[in-house]
Figure (cartoon, rainbow over the protein chains, first blue to last red):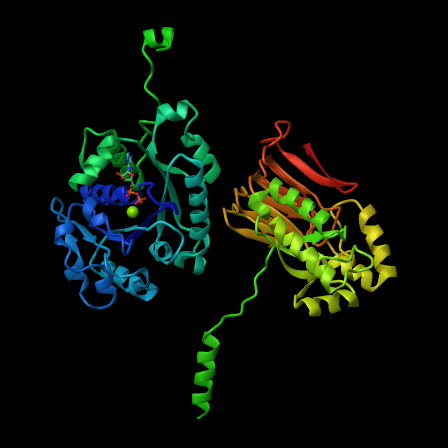
Length: 270
Length: 255
Ligand SMILES: Nc1ncnc2c1ncn2[C@@H]1O[C@H](COP(=O)(O)OP(=O)(O)O)[C@@H](O)[C@H]1O
Ligand SMILES: [Mg+2]
């Protein structure tokens, strides 16, 4: 059984690529043969975050245009031999992706026995984002706790309910999960950010995880080691929890409350 | 040879697509023939709800002016609307004079609320029908006395989506998001939060109502009478409300 999961959001810069990298590593760590595909043609950066940018010889577009085989283009992860990356092309324009071509690549991965295919969607609601979600069985909607991100996610949820192959075949929208990223409990408490509850209520779908804002995310990206590998980082731990929930486990939410102030701070408000 | 001809025809067709869509478009009813006065009135509306009205396409209804302006007069009125920030795209369906005016201005004639011109076309019986529906208890029964039907939408209406119940009520089970739009010729029932826009009685039925279980709307309208909410009044923000029209004024009350 192959399950295709799209990581999408509408808005750019919310953490889709960070999430695609950590969730696919997490699935591989749990023993599942996983492929992660960068749909952001022209702006590839999944390979950077996965630390394999120097090993990209052929990319997604090459496979779609029959210039390379899937086998040639799949880059095996350095740490996990059941994890593969399909990089986006930096040089082609977005028109290079076609629905037929994407379908063919996904079928090929299914035949190769992949259990999970994680699709890292570009921002926007144009062709690339549409193709990334079209074949998905499940969707992880990445949202930051702020109004504009929530609006864009709502729009994406509308598209997921109507513009996917499942929807066209009348099979329903498929599972949808909310993943809050860059969550800062202190700012939520101060009323500067929306809370998990606010976002969940507006979007009306279940929360897969809450990833706290953490400096280690940028450090991890820069070193090409997805943050889920960093067991000392709360963002990494939150991604590990999210992977467990993706696999159907019941794991309590962590890192969503601001640290309690000590007795003196509470008394004297410093 | 035949195939060749159809080949070129197919190529020629590729240059453009013609599609039909349901477009929500505002009507500007002009009640004063002075361009400066009209401009000031429109500017006020645009300033009140820029997100809704700035560069919005509008259909201009001149039928409230008598006599109707000549081509030069109409051009000045259209320019006044343009100067105020809206974009006239056509004239509302009227009488023969409107028809001639539309030809002179090279603008399309666009049907306004169906009820408005059906009434005009067959004045007597339609007028009776109108009083009948006005006094009948809502929901409005159809002319033939058939049971009222409704369009059921058992999902949330997401940002950017539009749901229109033509000729009947609309029932939404779920929230209507910010930036989403629900429209019905009849009543609108929302079992969830209304955070976007709701337009009831879009064919002109002033007896139509809007009900929702959590009021946070951006805009509501009944039979074209709208209200924009920049700020939600605390008296009914987040509460279950009903909205109706009384003497052409929108009324909102907690349920
Ligand atoms: N939990 C987090 N804490 C801090 N920074 C984050 C977090 N998640 C993502 N970022 C940062 O946000 C930026 C955008 O992330 P990215 O995954 O590229 O977003 P997208 O793919 O949605 O455009 C990057 O600089 C990334 O390091
Ligand atoms: Mg990205």
